[in-house]
Image (cartoon, rainbow, N blue to C red):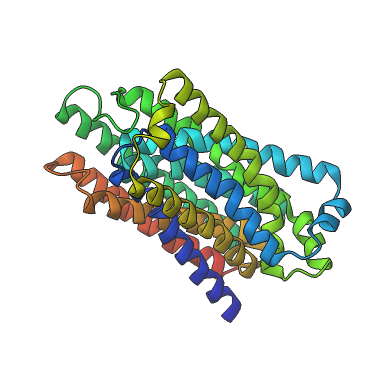
Length: 343
């Protein structure tokens, strides 16, 4: 029980840190979206994972040499799919804001990312009390996400056509932003597939001297750069198309570099802590841990969005729907916690 509670603590920390990781986007002074996302991607998906693995995984070359090539390729492909979702994620948060965009995308990929590992890896638990509660918790979470989406649409209708321009410098209709969020939600869940189905990599690392928690970082070193490459290439494409290369190093502010690195540290740190928490939750780690993580981070992003005045001046039904959706999400975390406790 003590180990399970420790796992819950790490998942709580993960939800808060990742829920706040896009907050620095609101304080960028001179950069466009592609500049911020480029530096963030290089730091979060390449530099920091490599440094963490050097620190926590001994005999790294031997770990990959002993792993089945099929496992490595699957982990990398899932990482690449998540990377495509990450690009859409950045666009969605920039366009719709933290309170709405983050919540919608997270609600979608939480359900997919939790239920598929549950069905594939622990089918015996699927229709037991724990599995049923986890499925119910994800269904409740989806209801909360829908309520928030409806509230966001009504907010934008009250504010006028489209939504405020973000770092990309253009207005996009709510319908197009909804498509972006759906694409992000479907693809982003593949990060959890990398963790769930890349377990043989972690097992090999542990056999060769890594701790149980440290061994998971070998999985991230395969998945994150595979997805990070797509993020970097897309940012370079935008910089070429928009002729914004000079803004990266000429028209920049030191604070913008700090914002990008803070985002990277919060995001990469949360992924590492997720590995710890999921390990401590046992067999249900990939499903329960993923669900709890994302339910908590949705609540965190709503709070951040409200504190940074994303919904300033919005009252009536749209704001009521946002609060109702958040309350439903809180209920989903309780149901998920009961599911894990009964496993």
